[in-house]
Amino acid sequence: MSDILSEIKAGIGLITLNRPKALNALSLDMVRSLYNLLIDWRNNPTVEAVAIRGSNKEGPFGAFCAGGDIRFFYSAAVANDSDLEDFFTEEYRLNHLIFTYPKPYIAFMDGIVMGGGMGISQGASIRIVTERSKLAMPETNIGLFPDVGGGYFLSRCPGASGEYLALTGQMLLGADAISLGLADNLADSAYIGTLWDDLTTDPTLSVADRLKILEERLEASTPVYHQPSWMDSAIDACFAKATVSGIVQALTDLDSDWANACIKTLRQRSPLMLHVVLEQIHRARHMTLANDLRMERDLVRHCFHTKHLNRSGHSSETVEGIRALAIDKDHSPQWNPSCIEDITEEMVAPFFHSPWSDQEHPLADLT
Image 1 (cartoon, one colour):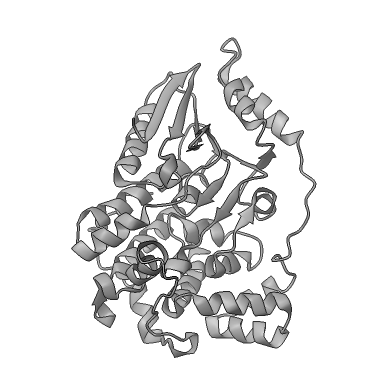
Image 2: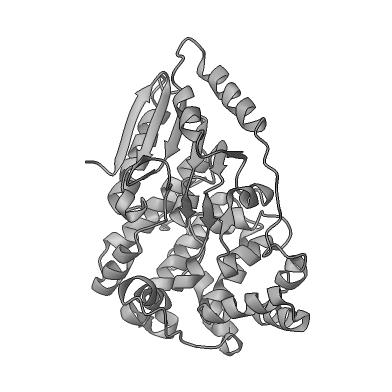
């Protein structure tokens, strides 16, 4: 059975991610299928809106998308497989298409929504979460950076919360995501199937009227929000510092349980990539989406081919991070350098030098 299920019903294009054993992690074929489907529907006058959901082993919903297929990243990087380059170019092109889609695009973000799952949902017109949604950009845990437009949407979170989320990979529950501008509405997971079905059950109503009813029902279910313990009032003061070392020092000076937990998390991440990520968020805050995606395409090339440090394949931070998490599963990545304080500007700056000219860039045509 296909990993992407689709149908057009009552004027709405319906997409179900159907790779539940992998938590709907995106393969290159899935990225291509989604892109081609959305292009077809963009040009199809009978499709007036699009809705997307995930599935779990029991059926629809329960999991949205856990990101890109990092096992593929590992094997392709080690084998120097050109499909790895194609994956990121085509995934970022898909992200841009969703953010700029001319028709309503509704994302039912139930369950796991991480990495690439954020990339295919953050550009939605309506982003629906549930009490069992778990959202994150956890890429620093594998020596990568929050891509798929992560620089763009995280940098637009309130205050310095984007820096915090990008550096730590903190997981958000549904209501948390709403408070940070990364989701729009909270629905009860027991009711989300009804909301999906109601989009198409009464074709006598216009699609616009059905979407209006959906939004009215969602607005009527406003959650009682309880601020989580990780959302400390010191986030802005600490994570607004200009450097990673400055952030760590501010957390050290604060010396609270929350600050010490943050330090512990940061000390487990790739020191090199923490510095790259902070610079990414700072730059992206002043970029258009297209320019951010072009920057991220540059960054991901450097992550797998860090030529200025003479590192690629097994020796790259990203491949080592994936090895430790998903291949050998020893959870003991050997970062190089191993200490935040040992990172220099000369190690970080080349990540932001594009390996392509403006005209030759693989995402040159994004506007």
